[in-house]
Amino acid sequence: MFHRIRRRTKQPSEAQRRFAELYPHMQDQVPPGFGVPSAGQERTEPAAVVDDFLPPELRVPSHDQLDGRTMPWKQPLVLDGKMVLCAECGTYREWLILSTHDQVWLRCRAGHQQQETRLDTAWYNRNSGPADATHATFEDCLRHLGH
Image 1 (cartoon, one colour):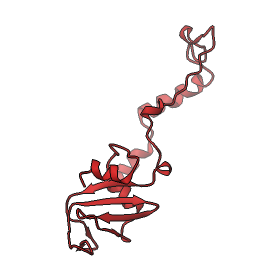
Image 2 (tube, one colour):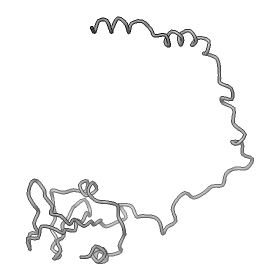
Image 3 (spheres, helix red, strand yellow):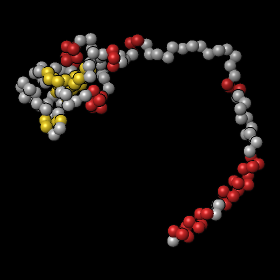
């Protein structure tokens, strides 16, 4: 069966034969209007230079302009098959996850902080959503997040 299919495909199709006949005649032909600018493209005066940046009040600071970023994490945090607990009070949910200077810190509701070496900035970026606010101080950020 496969031999019959292969033998049939060795012959060029009707469309391929017609293209092979027409191709030499089309070599030096150019479609009408090709390469000619349209009437709408001609300008008599140069375009004005416009600043394409957002106004300062709408700009978001870049990651190198921030001391860190924070996101809430309501559910339990499971790493390597084990639930992460606060080293001081044993809390296992409602974390604030802080990413600063290529380190990830966990902060429980009671205010205890511990560095989590199993997490990195790439993990934080994958799991965090867009920032909804920027804050001048860490305390302002905590108030904003309800801690």
